[in-house]
Image 1: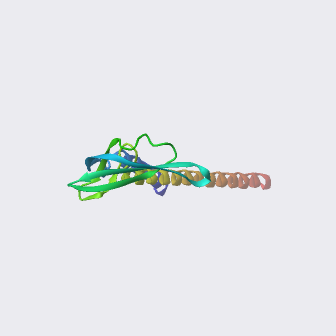
Image 2: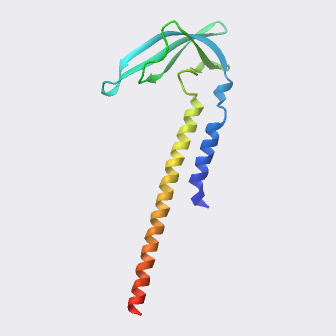
Image 3: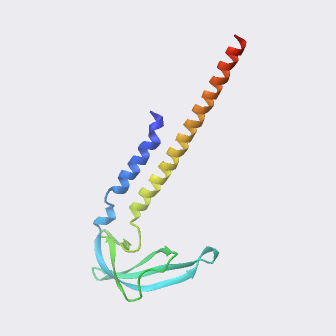
Amino acid sequence: MLALLPFGLVIVGVWWHAQPAPEDSWQVAEGTVAQIDHFEGARGIAKYRLKVRYTVDGREYVKVGPRHSSPVPFRVGEETLVRYDPANPSRSYLPESDEAPTRNRATVLTAISGLFALWFGWSWWADRRTKRKHKQISESRRTADG
């Protein structure tokens, strides 16, 4: 039964990933690309980061997107959508640029579960192979002695 646990976790992770993220029901606001930062990351690799301004109930917010290794598909002044949490409008993501935060957690769970399942399967197979070899050695000794 314990052997099925890693595979069950993979199935749960895939199912979770297929479910709509809570962020998908957040409100949508029009945002304007305010700035695109270009800087050098580790090992001299160019990185880009998007800053988008959006307004909710008369209050302005700025969403700083994640770093991208390829140029972002926007220009300063261009409009884009921002999804924000109605209970806390400063919590937001850019559907065209970011991955919804819950999706990231589901992906990590699925990846870790998959690696655990592979490790568990390999360990089980190696243990079974070792036992089979020991059994063959024992049987060959019995026939040689008997």
